Every structure is written in C-alpha cells, then in structure tokens.
Amino acid sequence: MTPQVAARLASWQAPCSSRDVAARIAYMQDAAAHGRGYGLAVVEPHDMAIPCGWVSAEIPRGESNYAMLTYWIGEQYQGLGLMRRAAPRAMAEFFKVLRVPELRAAVQPDNVRSISLLESLGFSRVSAGQIWCSARQRHESCFYYGLRQA
Image 1: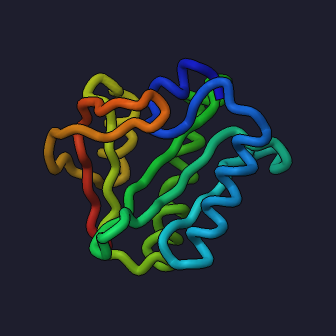
Image 2 (image 1 turned 90 degrees about the vertical axis):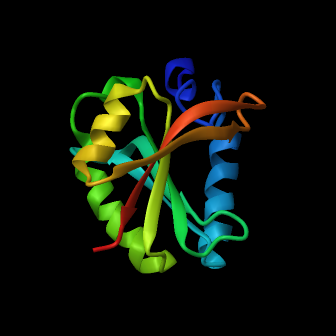
C-alpha cells in the first residue's frame, strides 16, 4: 500500500503494516461469517503466492438492497488488466454470497482509470455525493456508480 494508492481509497492508509492487513482480513472474515461482507485478495497471475490487490463488498449498516464495492491494485501491477479480469469473478461471488440486488461503488471524480473500469464492468453513474473517508477523517466528493444483478 503506497501513498499514491491510499490517496484513492476511503479506508486504507499508507503506510499499511502487516498488522493492518491482518486486521482488515479478520474484519472481512467476520463480515463474511455474518453475511454482511466478503473480501478477496487479487494475486499475481503467474505466482498466486504474491498478493497485488484487493476487492471486497460490504453491506452498509441498515441496508439490505446493496453492497459497496471497494478495490485496489498495487502501483507496480496497475495497467496490466488484473482488476478487469478479477472483478467480474469477484462480483459474481459477491452477488451470490451477499444476496443483494445491487453493487455500488464510490469513486473520486478525477479517477479516470477507476471510472473506466466501473463502466467496462457495466456500472452506471447514479449520483454525485460525499463519502466519509476514515483514512483521512473527512468527507470527500465522489461519484456513486451502481450495477444491478442481471
């Protein structure tokens, strides 16, 4: 997790220690056990022992109609199409496991790569708004995108 990657994320911080990653994994395991979230590592395709990113979905408290999708790829792996290959499989799993009719994602308005990814996956822009970024302890502008299960 580099500062450049973390700057695009609402809840991941840089530096990110192995303890931070272990806590995130434990949190998502608990969320999965209770049917409110699911997280998956994105691995290097030629060496599955090398993690290079993350994709997860979590149902916000008080909601049942959608889960928020989050994802990132490490800087050295960006531009290789890894998330374009991983996201459809992950999204199918999220719909199946979380049993929600819609996935949503929040993206910074100037994050052209992420917007392109979402649109290539079939997401449509729903609205502009604000998202709480716990990593920076402030609200930030975003575009919300949504995809209903086919």
